[in-house]
Length: 399
Image (cartoon, rainbow, N blue to C red):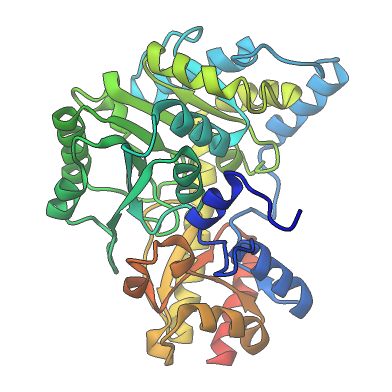
């Protein structure tokens, strides 16, 4: 068989990973990680920490494994974690949930997103509105579902949407408004005016709001405000988060969906045929993590804020223009002041030139909007201070 038919081609094309000849290509993350390994460059491309999270969480995982909690957990998730997620939403945001019907544990936030899109989209007449640049899985998942992706651009340097463009993008064909807040890759936090408008438009066009809030505890200037807490939003909002970013355990893949029981039930109807269940002992460890004192969470944000500031100062010293993020792992910089006109080419040359890896923002955008991000690149600040300092020194020497 020379050609393999199937939906994989649609997913790959949606993510921009299909050549004109119909061949799949690796993600930019795989390419740049391989380039870092080949050159010995510091990898500030992919967003994973280089230190483990709280010892209490790691010890809880060890205890669960040693205690024999290693078989299939219940389909919705371990009761301890379901309860801890409901408690977390109440403790931090005043959102009251029934742990038995309004919470679902998933294999990370990406599976939660996949199950949600596949559950709620009903075919090619449906549209999913996203803010771009976007986490690359969004485009692949929407393409896999058969729906149409509609992008609302976020522009340098503050990366807030134009509300007229947002209103034009959301129509009666909109099934899902997908909101990533704090936002990857830009690090922006949407203004209250923006999220109020999202809720208003969702009501007007009978759309479901799906929020990706994996960076909820990694905000630097103000506490996170979930859309589900806004007046009129809770009944049509599914909130998605995970433990990976908060507790620096990205390999555990423990995420969750919360929201109205009927919407969670629809997501479960699809999720149960994906991974079925996952990460039994890690679920118990995440439950312990979610119940840690407030100071642990503020300390995690403080450390990442310090990393943001250290990286931002280093990028400015090297000559980049920098958009200071309000949250997340990432900082976006403009390489145009350094003479760059193509961020993709700039990032491919950077490991040899400076010994540092970054990701071009065009990798997170649709073809229609890539020119708006031509010289912008994303750096990950979720690394040790000594690593960020060395990366900054290398960039300063190179430029």
